[in-house]
Length: 467
Image (cartoon, rainbow, N blue to C red; front, side, top):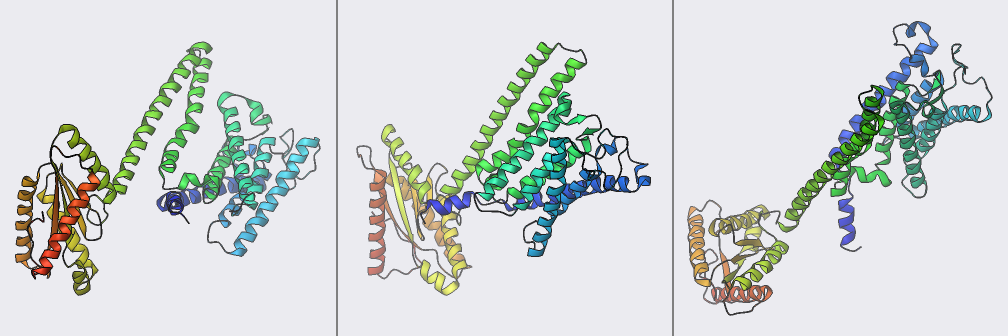
């Protein structure tokens, strides 16, 4: 496996917080559908229940309510970590849903009445007793098919489940468009055989739950990821779906009320949509920049100490050298190596060793200016790019030595702060690369460390800069 493979897996990993919120919303959605469909089904079976219901409840036919309950039950039983028995019952309910929806669709195609529609309850007031709308039957047929593949993670079955789910989304939006824009044929054949508003709401809720389930695998999983694209998709998707409906509906309403002519309403709607999309693009660009900045900071920062890592040091250091060369200004690289980190780890534990690293990083931050480049470039190696010559770098190091000595005199840590350091300065006339400066500072540091060992310097002391 290449390095890119685990990075790809990491970027496509689902966001657990989003999944937790989505699971709660799914349960609420299923409960609302079950409550609505259960109430209507009871009203058909027990006429006394229908008395307090609002006018138009009967537009949701008895088989429609039954199909909604079957779909809700199948979705509830197909959640992750369900037992094999639950999954089997879920598929049985999906099969029953397919039988009902398929029989209604067959009636619409052949123009015959099988009597299946009024098997549970009569519907004498309708021109087609008990028959749900064509759009509703197609929706349930698609839902039943997707429920058979709800846990599928392998292609091409998974791809087929995603395509069917997308078809459910399109069908629901078409029915919604029919209601919004007065296109009656888009949501039914007649006033008493149509997809009712409360049926449409239940369809939308089931589509939401179904997309959430497919997002656990397949192409819809992009909506749940932790990557930049997933975050942007979750932010933009509601606007992308609702904005056209809101604008066109507003235009149609102003035309019907006689406030504006059709041409003026269309012109204003186009202008508002353009401005809204422009604003959406600006917000997306800002969000992308923000996320990119966070990602860049994460990739250039050392997790333990909070200062730059090797990548950040090399990137900013090379820029600093180019700037110094252009401005003909001095530049100094300091290379640090901690003395005795292994002994601290062995004697006091790795937490103490980590604290040792943090202490040195704090010393470096407090010693050098904010414009200087401070980094941890290895396990026990630190480096600083100072925007000054070697003389001023030595003055800064003297301050750091004093601070380290004060920390050692305190004695609260149980181990001394000790390090070796080398220095390499870029003079005005030199044309040395950043890599060469770092290598020269590293060599000077190594010479100082060897000198301390030859002269028996104690580990707890800090020395002068190796030059």
